[in-house]
Length: 317
Ligand SMILES: *[C@@H]1O[C@H](CO)[C@@H](O)[C@H](O)[C@H]1NC(C)=O
Ligand SMILES: *[C@@H]1O[C@H](CO)[C@@H](O)[C@H](O)[C@H]1NC(C)=O
Ligand SMILES: [Cu+2]
Image 1 (tube, rainbow, N blue to C red):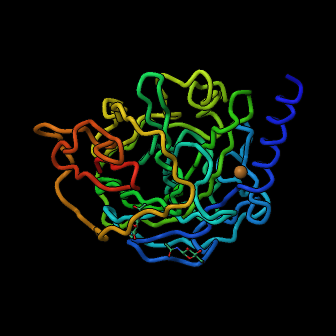
Image 2: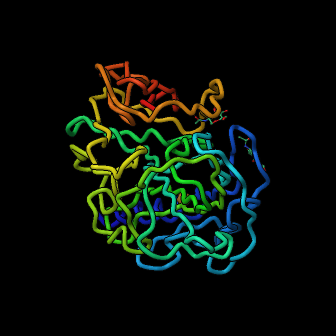
Image 3: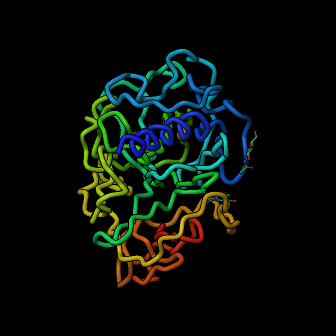
């Protein structure tokens, strides 16, 4: 028993020392940008270590020692924006889940000098874990070297922080064990709409650290369900009712990819169509709709499209 726990301790230490990452590059409609140009340089830009304290103001942008270094980039509402992963290796290596939040700088405030405090953050994108009642749990973010999401077309114009967050839960069975890989970008959204983003949360405040999706043993017993941390994704238009949370249909695969990069898919730019109103049959927005071993519905409710995230996961976007 003793050697077993020593082995666990060593494995945790080894993971800590070698396999971390940061988010230095913003992607704007598929175009790469310079490292830490529009993304605020994070305190861990060299050591790559995660933030593990959900109560610190550094759970927000993790930039307390680096503030004031980023520029602000103009993006049209409806654009595809993303972040690339840099580390050792340069992908989301740890088992974990992803959230992307945005917050609007108060009017008259330059986002470059705004700290993002207050109950101002809403979620615009997530990639959760996939469970099947206790046989397997899989993490579709594993191996991604970049992530993309769409600036909601109905988002009001103005300056925003975009906060990306990978919550690594490979050693999260004790309080403080979850690892938060976070970064904030500065954007000026143009051509927006008149939506009312929500629900709103604060950082710190959004998480206590005791959430079932943050304080979790993913190995034994295998979780029967996974609850994504944070509020529901705001999908545009009025305030979210929380009814669009992705469901997790059964999967049969247990395979994990550690190095496969995401397949190149055709770039979709600025699709400023009518506000999403789900009609017909198929999977809901953000639900899984494909991937190796997936056996659920492979079509999406209109107007969402089944989009390949990686070989294990396609999602209605
Ligand atoms: C992100 O978007 C870029 C271009 O916009 C594309 O090349 C890349 O495959 C996308 N990545 C994912 C994971 O969807
Ligand atoms: C963006 O540029 C960085 C180097 O600054 C590179 O590491 C990364 O792979 C690039 N990402 C894409 C999607 O081109
Ligand atoms: Cu790590």
